[in-house]
Amino acid sequence: MESLTINVTIEENLMTTDQNKAIIPIFLEKLDENISAIEEFFIPDCPAHLPGMSDPTDREGFRQFVAMLYTAFPDLHHVVKEQIAENEKVASIINVYGTHKGDFQGIAPTGRQVMFEDFMITRIQGGKVVELWAQFDALILLQQLGFFQIQGQSKD
Image 1: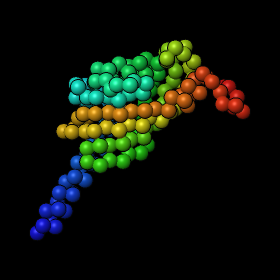
Image 2 (image 1 turned 135 degrees about the vertical axis):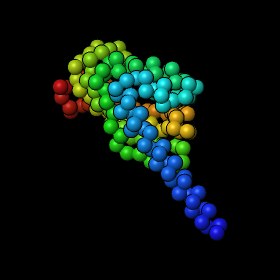
Image 3 (image 1 turned 90 degrees about the horizontal axis):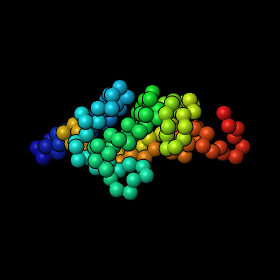
Image 4 (image 1 turned 45 degrees about the vertical axis):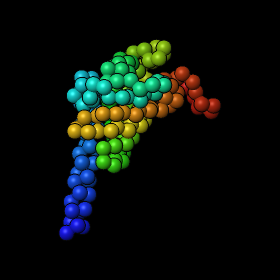
């Protein structure tokens, strides 16, 4: 009888893990359509640990960060490449695609298409993101924008 209880508990945790994993691609699809998806999927005081920031910000700070990206790359879209999850934590590797049509970190629009990886760890409770860690491959992004070139490669 005890082993049945343990099996049921494990199965319930796996379902929760799968449900949590499913939230990320849905969020990103909605985000690519409208930045207000952040309000739908994130709690207001969600700590967001973002690249270049020593201290976490909240949902509004995350929204401003994302708005900056969509201003620079208006056609930005995300494709979840890989996910690993355990209970409420979901780690995602995401391919991010876009065209550089607006200022990005002082770099004038180049019209170049870019693809870079975003690494995101989310903690999800009750279908909402309650904490976020995100990093993206800024080096490859800056290279694609022509900010620098690797020796032996030609500039496009």
